[in-house]
Length: 320
Image (tube, rainbow, N blue to C red; front, side):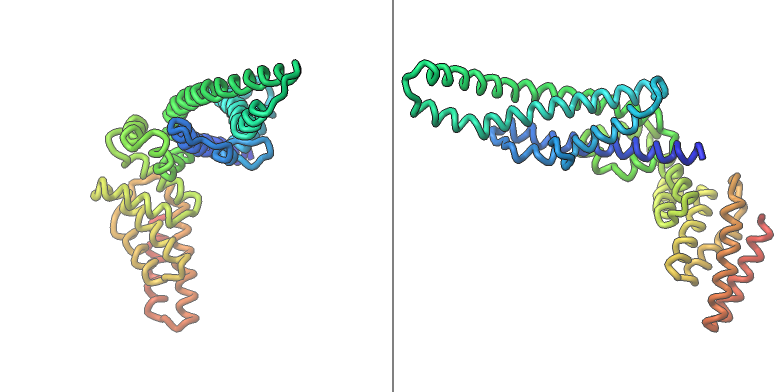
């Protein structure tokens, strides 16, 4: 039960990280438009709002739900800091949003009013106050852009430390491999490659193997096959990876009702010796699948295939 809760918590943290990365990509576009002098209020609405429809609002809410409902002192320092920086980004973004609204909606009205204002003292006073409001909004946008940019820069650096801390965790490894394109948008292709080398060494062999094992254990056989295949491209002669690749391909084929392909893959499991530990459960599953294939083939009068399936089931059973 405790392991299940921890796994669920890890998934929520990874969703938070993904939202943070996506919000940073959105801010890159906003900052670029600002630098080109074409920023509009509508450009920030999908990035931040107070109605629950934006990236940052949902990010902030998920953070608060996960980190602030835990007993005091139970979260790790880096998690506490992540919650703090995300909250800071959200509130800076909200101020930036309000200042942009002032400039886009109220500044034209102030200008129009100034052209037609009367000579009364309060009208003159209004003009001065409106000018101060707009000046503060302009300054607020400039400062808000830089402050938010700095917060994101630090947050992205902190994420790299989080990646390093969790470089052996299958959930995190899977996340990093799955989100490589998103990481490239945030850090750039070159820096992303450097981060992967920092985490996994000169190539991704280790990462592919961790991901493949994790997908295999969780029954995602198509993804397990994909990452074992990537691993084999880097090390074609790794016996255990070859066997795990064959196993995952066979199981994937079975669930696609491609029985001849499944049996062909399972046949490779008997050709070489296994040096892996904790594979008994997987082999038992393969034996069970072979017997199911045999039954279904017999029902479809595929006698030859059924015999092949029975033979494989017996051979695999002897390996247990």
